[in-house]
Each structure stands twice: as C-alpha cells, then as structure tokens.
Image (cartoon, rainbow, N blue to C red; front, side, top):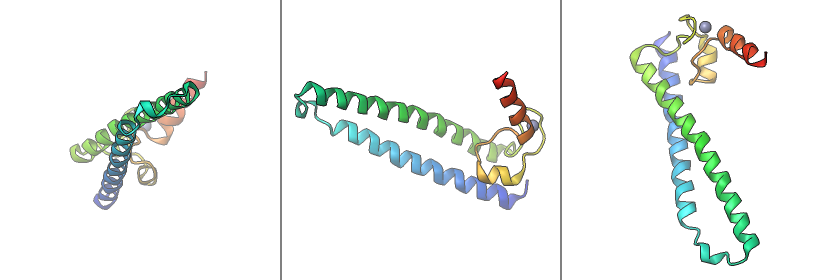
Amino acid sequence: MDPKVLEKCREALQRQMNELMADAGKTVSDMTLAPEENFPDPTDRAALESDRNFTLRLRDRERKLVAKIKEAIKRTESGAFGICDSCGGEIEEKRMLARPVTTECIDCKTAAEEEEVR
Ligand SMILES: [Zn+2]
C-alpha cells in the first residue's frame, strides 16, 4: 500500500477514535448527571429508563467500533493494513479510504454476504 494512503487512513482512524471517545465521555457524564429523585412520576421514570437503555445500546455499538478502530490502527503499524483477512490479497485503496476499519476485500466481503443470505 502507498505510504501516503496508509498515513491518510491512519489519521482518519485516529480522528474517528477521538470523536468516539469524546462522545463516550459525554454519555457517561449525562448519565451521572441525571438524579433519579427528579423523576418521581413513574411515567417519567419509564421514559428515563428507556432513554438509558438506548444510551447503553449505543455505547455497546460504539465500544465495538472502538475495538475495530484499535485493531485497524494496530494493523497500520504491523503492515497488515489493507490486506484482506480472507484471501490475503490487497484491498482497494479507495475502499480503505472510505472505510479504514475494513478487513476484507470487496470480493470476499460480497462472498461472505451471499453466504449469510443463504
Ligand atoms: Zn479477499
């Protein structure tokens, strides 16, 4: 892979990571700042609970994404970045730039998706 492309991808990953971390920090302080005694009405409490569930679900998704980004950054350091996990071929630079956490080339990804549908 072109070192310039690699560097661009690494920067994009780092930026995405920083954004996620900033959001996660916000979510945590939002949750600790919600004093339950301010919601004595059971309906409000239910709304608060479902809000919280939503936040937790979101955070679960974010956690998974953070893990993916960390893996991708590790790959930029080990030289495995842009190499398909399934066939060992090079992944298109365009694809890596669009989605730097990608671990499979378009052919393998398509094949895997067709497998899932069946
Ligand atoms: Zn492949």
